[in-house]
Image (cartoon, one colour):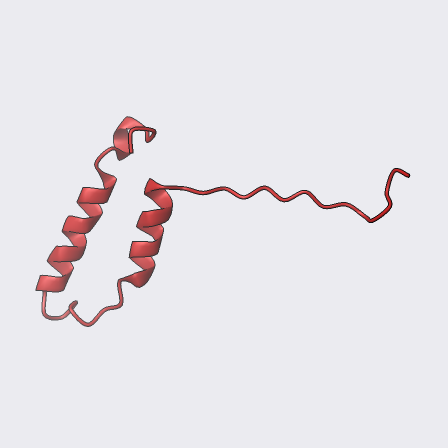
Length: 60
């Protein structure tokens, strides 16, 4: 996580703390947190894919 801006250095531990607290709260225990976990993963280890496309036989 050293590549993150200073404001985001602790984002993973902070979000995990919030998720643990939400699990302890009875009313929130049944909520699906999968989307939050996916977003956290994307935030702390982003992956970019670049795709180049062009027509077949172009430039010949």
